[in-house]
Structures are given as structure tokens and as C-alpha cells.
Image (cartoon, rainbow, N blue to C red):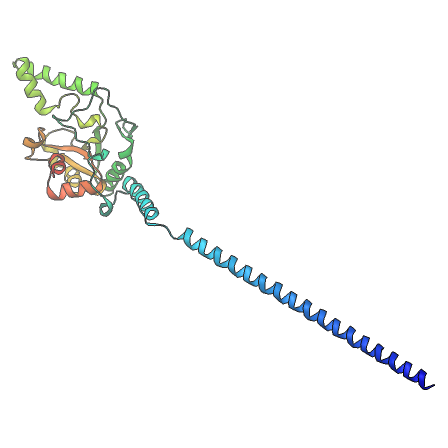
Length: 280
């Protein structure tokens, strides 16, 4: 009996010991599982943080232009603005600027020089690039009660040649020999290849009420308004009074040439010819 009790006691002890071992094992396993979860969570948090930092750094690098990128963007904007709005503040003089092409008795165009033109309402042609500023200028004057006629625009070499030969013939009819007639003719009609009209950037503008190409044109309200306001639209009075010695062309209060707003502003304010402006 005592032996059985001892046996039962030992059996109970083993059972209790096994239960304690089982509980300890379970707690250990639970602790390991929790630690594993926490470790995994911590790794995930670190990974997410590193990824976020990388994305931010990459975005910051991409969104922040380098000096070269900034220069390229500014150059593009400048070129676009120069063509469309021609702001005075952003203009930088360039001898290769198409708007400043010099055509005169010592700088001629070839017979085959042409440009892309567009027709005005009356059929006269102009370089497509000056159509909009020309229309803006004429419309602005009309809003003030003025009335203009563009009596001449683009003129090809062959047409200028015809006009020049006609002038020589007219002078010869007055009794001059050919050589004298030639020299007299070129004082009023420029030789073929030396006319700005061949560029397509020049226009002869007269008042509707006075359509003669003489000094009387300067007395019309239209001519006076044009001379005072042409620079705002990129035009200059190309052959001003008392400048014949420089331009080799007589005073023509009707002849306007497109050079762009910036150059036109400087030329008209200083009372220069295009020749003088380009020399400076």
C-alpha cells in the first residue's frame, strides 16, 4: 500500500513535471513567434523607410534642374519669346538676325533670292513673319480714325528690274544719255537686288486720301501717326529726312521696314538709320 502510494506520488510528480515542461515550451514558442513577428515588422518598417527616402531623393534630383538644364530652358523660352513677342528686355543683338538683314547699294540680294509670302487684303504680298505685326499696326491706326493703303510690299528681282529700266527710259526721254539717265534713275528707284522690297520685310504705306509717293505724304495724319508709333510694332521709317548721304536713298516718308520691336525702339528713339544702327 505504501509502495503504491509512492508510485502514484512519483507518477504525479512526473505528470506535473511534464505539464510544467509543456507550458514552458508553449510559452517559449509563443515568445519566439512574437519575437519573429516583431523582427519581421521592424525589417518591413526599415525597408519602407529606406524606400521612401530613396523615392524622395530621386524626385528631388529630378525636379531640381542643373545649371545646364536651366540655361537650356531659358534659351528655349528666349527664342520663343523673341519670335512671338519680341520683348525689348530680352533682346540680344545678333548680326545673323533675319530681321536686321541689310540691303542697300553695297549689300545686294541675288536674283534668285525669295521668301515665303502671304497676301494682304488688296493683293500685296509680305513676308509671312511680318504679317501679324503689320496688321496690328494698321488696325491700331484705324482705331484712331486713320485710313491706310499698303501700295507696295514684296517685290521680286525681276519686278524691280522692270521698274528701274522704266525710270531710266523716262529720264532718257527728257534728253539725257543712258549713263546720266542711269545715275539719275538710281537716286529715286534702287537698282535690282538692292531693294528691301525683295526681302519681303518692307512696305510702302500711304494715306487713303493721299496716295502719292512724294514729300507731301509726310504731311498726312497717317504718315505722322506711323512715324510716331511704328516702333511699337517692330517697324522703322527706313529712309528718314536728311539721311540720304548714309542710305543713298531719298527721303521716303512712306517706306517702312520691319526690324523687330527691340531694334525699332532703339533706332527710332535715337533717330538712326539701319546702317548706323548696325555699325554701332
